[in-house]
Length: 466
Image (cartoon, rainbow, N blue to C red; front, side, top):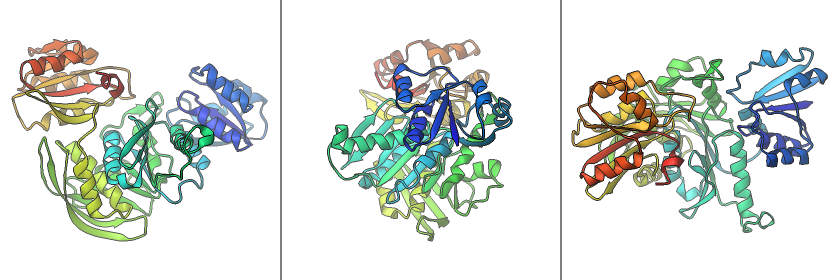
């Protein structure tokens, strides 16, 4: 069977080479024309031919097509190029699952997807599994932890499915002298992979954080909820109850555990929560949690961690349920979450001179996320609130009219910044301060001894340089 890998922009080269190494006859279609020279040479080494879809007319017999879940072409549109072929279609995620068949049998494998909270959940899980020397792929990079020490495998790496394989390969190179590393046994006993649009299905647990917005993908031919449905390919699924009920109520899966802040019919829910900008206290009840060891567990626990708003607490619930599903001891979960202090360059709290700075930085920040961030202040009027950011960094964009309307009703002093802030400032009548450079927002707050809630829509890497 011939194999066609579509989309070399989002990890297709890695998938194609992995399949060619196994002996498959592989072709590639560079739909976005982004192939780099070094990648082209790699394809040449493994006799992988670049083609256009018109070239399918020359093919005979069977063809497996591997495509990204957000491909702006339907299967039927691809078939039109040669209706006589016998087609099999699988996603990049499914291809990675096939490539990694048999990998990681002796480790805990977790895949994390959802609209919001993915990275925060990954790093909360990291704290819980620190004794397992976790291997991590997240929007903050490919990392491995050895004896509580962070080792950066690759900093700028996307969370496409192919980079699950890349992260595993980087860890292998680190440990093997033939690749320039040190000879050592595999140190990680846990792997945590973040994925934006679904999971590969290799996870012992797949965590679906939420579907707070079901944004369109593939040029409006599909949606976030359809892509993230792939999480149900994992052995156990921990899913936000409200998202399960709304989008996936017809799913047939033997091990689904649900979590919710308010819905007491969920497998895990909140009994009581005491919010704080420093340390939130959460009492949790869990019932009939299905586990990796085929146990069904029930109980209660009290968590203290950095979770200043309800959206953070929801992340905590998903993380706790994921750990319980892997039969992790309650005390280890409690201890790990107590160590979680947020993520620098994402959500965190810090003191700078006489100012308290709370940062909410995320490429997917939208109206609901802004509202949730402001609400966690609990009407503390002494905080400056800065809102702004960049455009063109995620599939989901921001509703300026909705944000402008929300800002009109905020009593706190507002600072708008960046291109998002500039555009919003033209839609409101309320007097606000516009500061173009976000760095100057921090300077302004510190100089005036003011506390600051900094909400910024951006790739965290741009802001981590300051």
